[in-house]
Image (cartoon, helix red, strand yellow):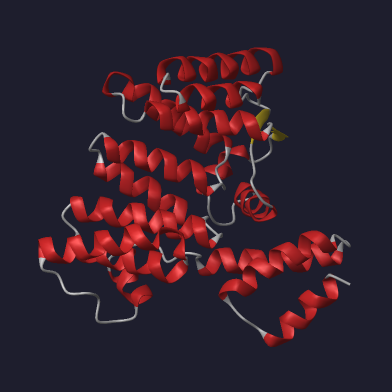
Length: 276
């Protein structure tokens, strides 16, 4: 955590190279001293919410995304400090504009996803790194994989905003336009940028805005519609399971998230009861 703070201070003052080295040294030291290295019987993972834990553990048992979690079945899971995960994201971000260190940026981005397979931030950061080196195919694949586990409106809006640009530049402007609209509909977090870029896309390519419902347009172009029905079902079943074992704060968190996307008057009353 100290290294992360120091690196951000160095980066702000313009010393990007030293900032990167501070973080790489910290990550290496943590891996050596604390053993944060996946093995045959133990893996090290990071989570940013109860929802990410639910999705990961279901996938580890073979049910749904992230599919990469199925490789962890039967292994002991140790949770790494949040700062360790954030260091990987920060390194990827600091290196993403360095053409001499592209492979390093991608390697740390890929490790971030390994650490947090059910956390959207890693997919966005790696997707951006691929995009900045012109690898639109891998950028799209990573961002679409991230949309399969994304649950927070801001995460979803950011992912669609990034994917819109990637698809546009990959020669799929109609799909890109649908992604910009989905970003705008999901959250206002990227509204200014998404609106400006959507206008530029239309002016440059001449494509018309999707005439149909946006989710249908996304599905037509084989773009995941987030949050997926599978994720919403997982949130609901996770909330139910948490209630059954008396974990009411967890149940309330999962149910509140589900109700963002599927309003239900009866379940709103259940949500209130979980807070009493």
